[in-house]
Image (tube, rainbow, N blue to C red; front, side, top):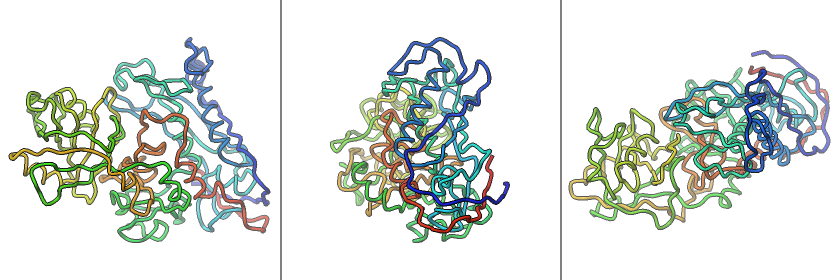
Length: 470
């Protein structure tokens, strides 16, 4: 980390932000790929490279039209070879190149802000010579049968991606990380950068402790990072807007036999069709793939005759959630319930992808899963549906939950809304097919952290501490 000092002056009223894409690709790769391509979904580009650049600019224009700043925002962008295999892969990543604190217009002293946001607040470029955001996206996804089973990027503007992955919502998501939707805390040990909190931390509330992250010790933050279901975004703008975006919360109702707990909380998946208030009903059948832990459904099921037309009960572990669900679907299941393998007060959110999945998927806690298993001999009939009286992805005060799985998922934990949100939100850890060019609660999140707040200090020439992240 490099600490330097800069001088700034006050800012007036800001105008719509200008976001510039800085092409970091070499000749004949990424944005410069000359492979011919037919225009698609409103994208007029005639090469893959042109279509990629057009989409990046489309995403930049969407954010630029929603945010205000008098300082140009520059995003270093490229397509690179990132991790990918048949079952999953990295779509992209982005983050700030520099962060600043104690600048003119900052809403809190002693607090780190993403570079683009601090520039907006100060009204000047605090970091001349630095671009603001670094963004990388996976070039392996195109025309590669060994990456996501041949799923390709969709370069249209209209979201009609079919079985492919629409790039536009992925761009909006990753740009949002660079603009302010991310924490700088090391989730494994809870350490802050140079001992100062970031603006994001000031709105992370752990309901178990009744503390925000900037009020905690490093050890408390590390424990809080895996406090599934009990970490919420405590910003007023997001909380006020949540009822306008979120629908009912998923539940598992036990129809038979009669047990003490007849309605269980159900975790959501980032893949598969959404539930509705009517739901899907059927008998629970424990998965059996005939190998290792037979109920983890990491191989084709050998009890397909019993599974057909029923709801699969599957243990978490060994393989991806998407692979488990696809194995159950191939055996004829009409829905999937995945049982957690660690003790938690709430069911886990299920991230990842499952191309071709047509049945709903949910999760239950280890304790609730054991309850269901103990009744299987008598026959357990359940309904998976939405409860319209509780917002999915929020607590009883409409504070939206943050993604805090156990174990920790570096790069995903905390810097996302929880996957229990319904409908899916742009800033969940995995992009879903329902998303395209809308930013939902992400805009209110930005209002909370200072994008919508004007500079309030009248002091000029305030020294700024800057940290270079890369």
